[in-house]
Picture (cartoon, rainbow, N blue to C red):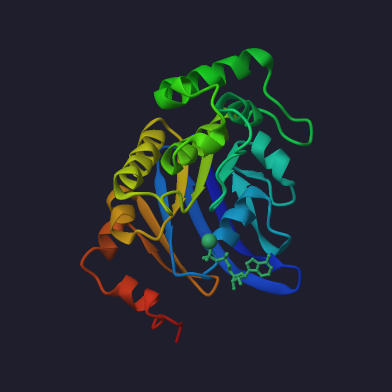
Length: 245
Ligand SMILES: Nc1ncnc2c1ncn2[C@@H]1O[C@H](COP(=O)(O)OP(=O)(O)O)[C@@H](O)[C@H]1O
Ligand SMILES: [Mg+2]
C-alpha cells in the first residue's frame, strides 16, 4: 500500500523560503485536504511534492520508504505522483484525445508502453464518458467543468498512485464543483492517495479523511475533519489570528 510522506520539508523559491518544516502523510485510499488562505503555501507544497519547487532546503518527500526529494518532476511522475495544477486546465488547441495521450508521455522521455497507453485511454473514457463523446473536439471548446475533468483524466492517464489536485473546484459552478468532489472521493475509494487543496472548506471537510491547515508556510493544525466541524479553529486561521505564540 502506497504512502506518501512529507517530513520536515523546508524550501521555496531560491532564497525566499515559503515552506517551513512541513509534515504530511497520506496513504492509498485516503483523501487529505489542505486548507489555508491565499499565500499560505498550499501550491508551493504541491510543487514540493511533485518536484516543481525550485529549492528544497531540508526535509524530505518519501513514497513508501523511497526518498524522492532530489528527483526531478518527470521521475517523480514515473514514481507515481501526478499533479493537476491550480488554474491550469488543458491544451485548448488540442483535441480531448490528444490531451489524454499527452498525459501518458513526459517531456523527458518517460512514457507508458503502447498497450498501457490504450488501456489508460479506455479507463479515462470509462470514468468520464463525456470525454469519450467529445474525444475529437478541441479541448478549448469544452465547458470549464469538462476541462477540469480532462485535466484530472490527463493526470490519471499516467497511472499515478498519488494524485494532487490544487484547487480543482475553483471557478466552477456549484453543481460541477460537487462533481469534482465526487470524482476525488471515487479516486480515493479506488485506492489512490489523494491530496486536495481547497478553498471550499465545508465541502472539503465532508470528503476529507484528514486535514492539514497551512498558514505562512507552516502546518498550524492537522487532524481528522471532525476536529474542524463546529469549531472556530479554521476561522481563526482564515482571519489571521492563528500565528504561533
Ligand atoms: N515563483 C515564486 N517566487 C517567489 N515567491 C513565490 C512564488 N510563488 C509563490 N510565492 C510565494 O510563496 C508564498 C506561498 O504561495 P503559494 O504556495 O502560491 O500559496 P497558496 O497556494 O496557499 O495561495 C506566497 O508568499 C507567494 O507570494
Ligand atoms: Mg495556490
